[in-house]
Amino acid sequence: MLYKFKSKAFGDLIMLEPNGRRVLEIIGKDPGAKGIVSPAQMPAAIASLEAAVAREDAERHAANAHGGEEGGVAYDGAAVGLRQRALPFIEMLKRCHKADSDVVWGV
Image (cartoon, rainbow, N blue to C red; front, side, top):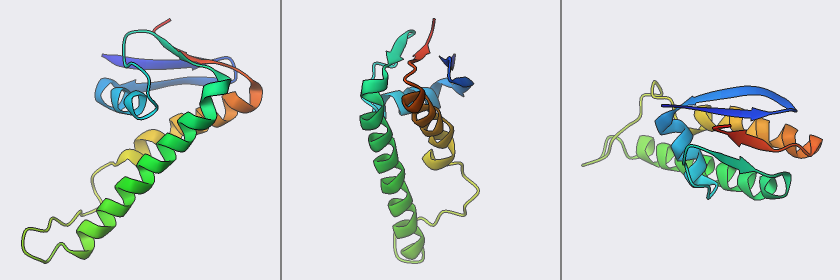
């Protein structure tokens, strides 16, 4: 399944199901077949996504710092993280909030 996020203020944004589901769960939305993020909800959604990205970045940094220690796992940087997956959606939310335009999916 694909998530296709639409808005009048931004081009369509398509995400694979696992990535779209994760982003929607982070912002507190039901990752069902249909939904909407209103402009009033966008500042909180942006803050939630940015906080989740910062947490993952900190975890990666800590894992790299302790990668040589017993049980530590170092990240090689090749894996695509939440930062890369969420950044287009964060940008979409910012532009749509500024334009007072909803973001919808499954419509």
